[in-house]
Amino acid sequence: MNLTINGEARTVAPLPHLAALVSELGLDPRKVAVERNLEIVPRSAYDRTPVAEGDRIEIVHFIGGG
Amino acid sequence: MDDASQRPAADDTWSVAGRTFTSRLIIGTGKYKDYATNAAAAEAAGAEIVTVAIRRVNLSDPSQPMLVDHVKPDRFTFLPNTAGCFTGEDAVRTLRLAREAGGWNLVKLEVLSDTKHLLPDMEETLRALKLLIADGFEVMVYCNDDPVYARKLEDAGAAAIMPLGAPIGSGRGIQNMLNLGLIIEQSKVPVLVDAGVGTASDAAVAMELGCDAVLMNTAIAEARDPILMASAMRHAVLAGRQAFLAGRMPKRMYADPSSPLSGLI
Image (cartoon, rainbow over all chains, first blue to last red; front, side, top):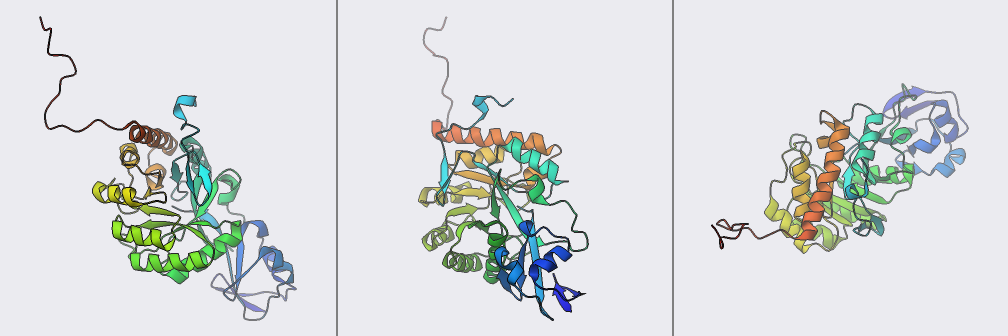
């Protein structure tokens, strides 16, 4: 399955839901926010949000800033 | 070191968007050599609020240190910013993500115009402010030291007005005390100097003018000893605040002797 994650093309094995993708990427779901095709996915909905061919995923977190 | 005389008076608080704070020094979390120094500086500054940015996670190395592991959101109120946004839509998208990442609706809006001087695009800032308020955010707005636009921002519902003292990261101090004074005088929401502070006396000047608080990043992060500078800023903000409350003496054209001239031998 081909996805674009944070602007990079990635090929991943089919995944049941967004929670599985976040885990597959080694990220702590409590410390990130996720957008799927420009729509924010609430953290509580990760395990019922599908990941589909061609999805554009953005995963962000807090970093230092002024 | 931390005796009562160095802390702000407990009853001299300020409030923004229904939240009350004792510290009048907000610090940024950018440009530090590491997050541990950043956290130590925040403690030395006595800060209760820190600004944070939101960016893509590093997918190639998800084990990299994370801000929230050092500067903890249960210790500091996070104020997510829109640094790097040049349009209202970018700002709204960024802060919606920030709200999802942390659940905060108190945010700092900055919409910049040009990467060379980083001065705010006030027309776009005002438009973005209206979009964010419609989306339920409480917005502290970085702006030019322009009383006319400051009034427009307040009328549109800004939770705080945050005029620059000088361009971001320039360390040039307060460039227009007159305009800043006009903004402070006219505003019913808190006014904070955000950007331009270079050293402790700049922060004291801002507070002496009657600002509610000061926001700074580079002045601490790029000091040779950031933790010592954070402490200096804490004292400067407190000194400036106390001087403002105390009411300064009038300026005179000529000298006025402190010792009586009568009774001289």
